[in-house]
Image (cartoon, rainbow, N blue to C red; front, side, top):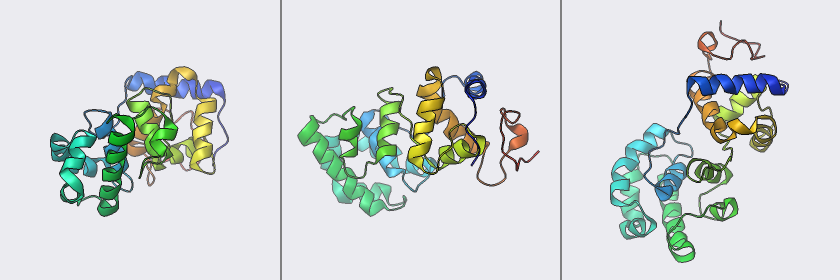
Length: 214
């Protein structure tokens, strides 16, 4: 775990990220807050590409809690059976759809506590929805962000909660909204778990990682 970088270095890093891609976007396909919530919940222990392949036809049929309930657990299972843990995920999606209809008028709430009270929705899923749909500066820490945060010293921490706090505490406010997308994309395509592409990295001169592939 690298030492926490100073403010000026972090500002330079995110300035470069912004110059390279001013408006980074998540790769999960969705059409509204409900389909985003479902897609993120389905993505646990699965790839975004795998989830997108399963949900393209699903969301044409069930893009609201009411339509998801009409499809039913068996119908939903048929659509998502290529995704890991699909049976439990189908149960959770049907349960959360029922709660959204009964308690929230079919709308996805914009409160982290309310989102986390839904079956199958943890803090990371809630933060993704808050950030991507409601534009809150929430930081969803996945394995990519955890790795990049610790390798680079941008946001070091022993667990995801510490990394989330480090992002909130040390990344300048102007970069907070897009921070987790920049970090995810950097970890997914450049600062990979094995054989990071340090030669192509736009922050390699600012990164303290000792095992660079140069």
